[in-house]
Length: 87
Ligand SMILES: [Zn+2]
Image 1 (cartoon, rainbow, N blue to C red):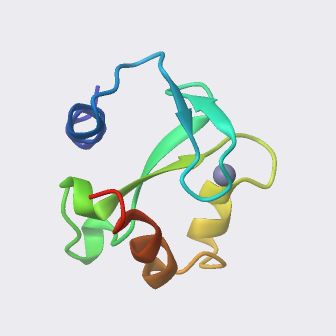
Image 2: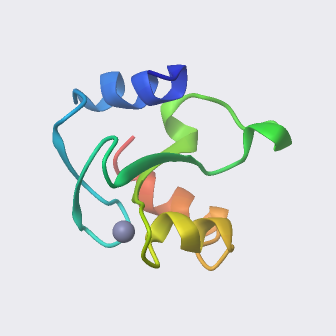
């Protein structure tokens, strides 16, 4: 498991295989099936692996929240606002 995924799961008291709700749309998902932990600020841009920079987004083949985040239809500012209540 990648370190940032472990950071996210540990912080939120979750395990691989747990049902996790997408933090944008609320869709029930399971790591690693259709859930990805997204870096709000990309690591290549200096973003950290800490929980305040991580958000659980539904992922997969369809038009998912993870793909929207990478197309910047879901902006980093929007995503940060969503998780700030949970940190
Ligand atoms: Zn979603």
